[in-house]
Length: 186
Image (cartoon, rainbow, N blue to C red; front, side, top):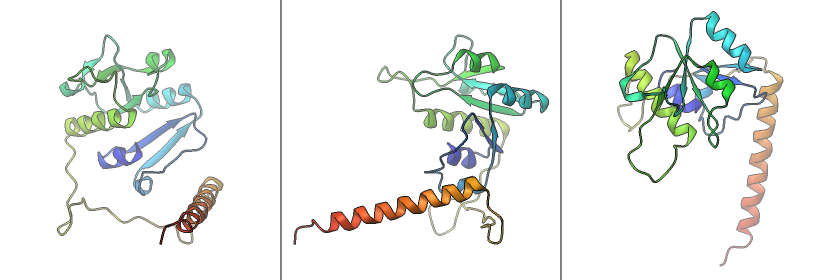
């Protein structure tokens, strides 16, 4: 979801109630977008109101509007529900309005939360008139801005723990590869 937020020009990713954020699959995009954390939904809601940010829920509730109509209202935070159970009553009560993503077959009850978030963020970016990012000339990719690597920068305990955890996984994966290689047929 962080990768999609970055791709679609979101300014921040808001994380509520998660002391540790998993960034696997974001491919370094977390260096290009601010991640703001709140301990509770109430804290986040107060911050949204304080900064005049409209909270748009993505949920198939009766008052939800088709996302293709771009019903956004200025500075907007997009709230996603739980992939299995959707939004709880506290989340629903926090939202100022709702959008839904129409489906065109009866093959699935809903989309994966990351896919749904990406679709809504794309519609928001289109509505907001964000300019498309430049493309690389020699590759089928978009240009990625460089970022400060952090050399000489003091790291937080969370960053150090994440780095240590990644190094441990790499070592474990390397051991697994070596073990698998020992059983190859000649």
